[in-house]
Length: 156
Image 1 (tube, one colour):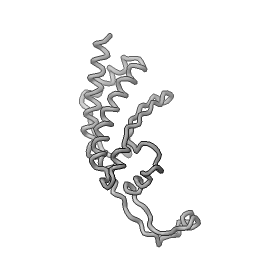
Image 2 (tube, rainbow, N blue to C red; image 1 turned 120 degrees about the horizontal axis):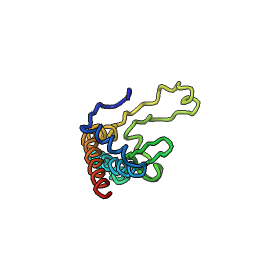
Image 3 (tube, helix red, strand yellow; image 1 turned 60 degrees about the vertical axis):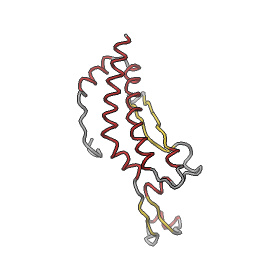
Image 4 (cartoon, rainbow, N blue to C red; image 1 turned 30 degrees about the vertical axis):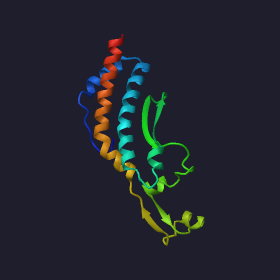
């Protein structure tokens, strides 16, 4: 990955991949989806700790979203804000990414001519939460995948 946020090394990754290849698609997807959820759970806990605390709505709205893209053979687990972004939590992206203050017409936005609007930087709390918890999350993914593989092999 050329644009990775950090470098990591998972001990025993070659053995883990070889064991996953021995399973059918359904079995390997089950093992890895559980492992990804375990890693995402660690990121979720860190994000809840780092979320702005004024009302507690953002921390309460955080959840794990999973995806299984069968055609592309990809699994994913993402920590995101649940529900609609416009039902009381619309300000979450502003706190994370920043916002412009003041009136800006649509024409000036499209033309990118409006330099008068003040920009307030976001705190990037979700990004920081990921960076803090990524090593522990990767370790949890590896451990959970190994445990699941052992239970699948033991159950056969």
